[in-house]
Image (cartoon, rainbow, N blue to C red; front, side, top):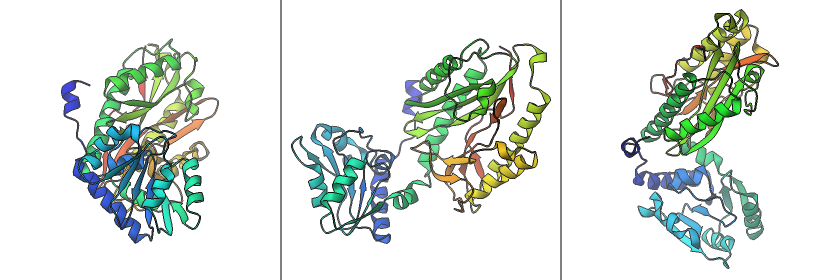
Length: 386
């Protein structure tokens, strides 16, 4: 990504973090919680803009319904903590502790008198257990019902960042599909995917799945030394983070090696046609009010009718944002109605173990009147000659 392109990236306005902190405090009151304790991770970044290091030294955001929010941080992390958007804009106080201090005692003082506290899902157990010992009369619960309510609907700036990440992943995918694949190992192609994602602006590469031949029937295949050859499919599932927001796209190629006789067999073509129709129908159904589980069912019914019901072995999708997998999950049993601004994958798959498989995945945002599909790489089976 060029310097000019990086400068054009949308950013979350600093004032937004103060609004998020205020909303978290209000929700805590509504849920009858006396404080929300947030450790390092996506929840902390969402509320403050702080990309804290995951250390054995405690970093914790304390959101108090009856007091200003406080970020407790090790003294050696004082500069980045005070530079985060929420603190720099005055919406957050930063309290630091030194090596010989007890940070748990500092948190205890901040939540003095609390009867119920909610902790973020990713808070390390060693911190939770120490807090429970120090606050023996306090009831602890997960903060996810509060924090997910805030994070599950993306604002316009977040959608713009998701679109930016999707576009970068699209370009990386197109580059791979247009390049040479025959004779290379899955691991070698996976490494190139990672390089392309970084070249397109990604800070991290979270996965670069390359599953060739029978390995395409393993949804989370770990690319290895198998050599890609003509006459077989290859599954590419790639993603990472750009400006903190996640990308995730899956496409299929069939390797012909320039030989028409090495093209996909009739069974695979039928399988892929069913899959493509199911994915398109499910994505088209993603609009406000439809239950998350119904999006899954729409694809599953089509796949089952074609005789592949037992070969679709995972949910159709997961939410996406600051994390690659977050709420909402599009799966049977989740009756949550979709709302405008929710972002998620739509990725049905059909896997014939020991033979081959296929998956098509796009990131979709629920718009006011229907889906907004962020990925633009064509979804048809790509025939690759070289």
